[in-house]
Length: 257
Length: 78
Image (tube, rainbow over all chains, first blue to last red; front, side, top):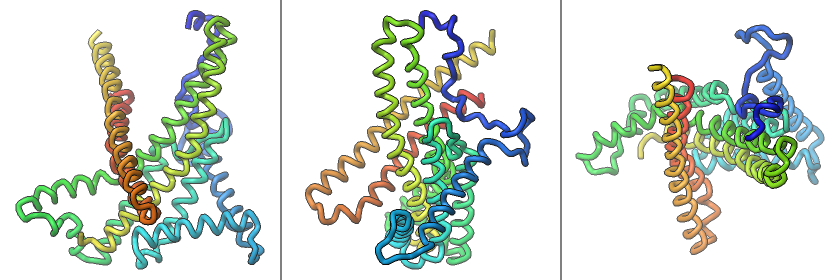
């Protein structure tokens, strides 16, 4: 802190890691510009394809490591869809599987030091959440007709309360895509920013030897601990995103409470 | 000068919005704590209810995330 002025090169902003940059050249970022977001999205898709194709290539009774990871992921999501959304939601299983794999791989690839976390951008998660929201709404009306509006009319509540509850339900229905997308983006962004804040404290021993001898080991331990927490959070947020998709899907298929 | 006061208010508001995190922490802790106390009484039924617990966590966490959203809006959109 005391000598912040003479070592400007060590000071960086914790949000710098989320800047979208073009991969080639320094031009403005347009609609078709290949940016670091594009690179890391393509990388996560390549990883998913590699895992699922290599995992199911030489199917054996005693599975190899890759095969058992692919089978575990498939079985995990299939069980989740069946348990939460019911048996008749299984036709929509491929979409939910795609969402889960993309989110979990983007989150985990973003944990590589120097990597770019695509899911930390609200623009990315908002597209996924809006797609789920629109798909679920259209599906609800297509399957149940106007009976889908029964999702707002809670027939188990006392009659005078129902209009108030209906109003609350309508508001919470339209807030769904917001909370759905910002939960994922916010968790990813906050975790990475916290790691970066401690990373800014870590080289303090170079600046001021007095307090730095204490701060540097502490912040390196803190980075390690938060990184471990982030590995857990990456998985849990992907899980929460998919399980909420299943809950919304259940509402669309069975709108009556 | 006037712009500075507005910016100061926005930053103070963004800081105040962070108190919402405390509420989300209380909510999530309440959900998990009650799940755990129920699960220790009847461990055989606990396995099937983990998904419900995560849904509860997600819903109570959503309101903490709205405070984060308010902070972001105050920092970058006002």
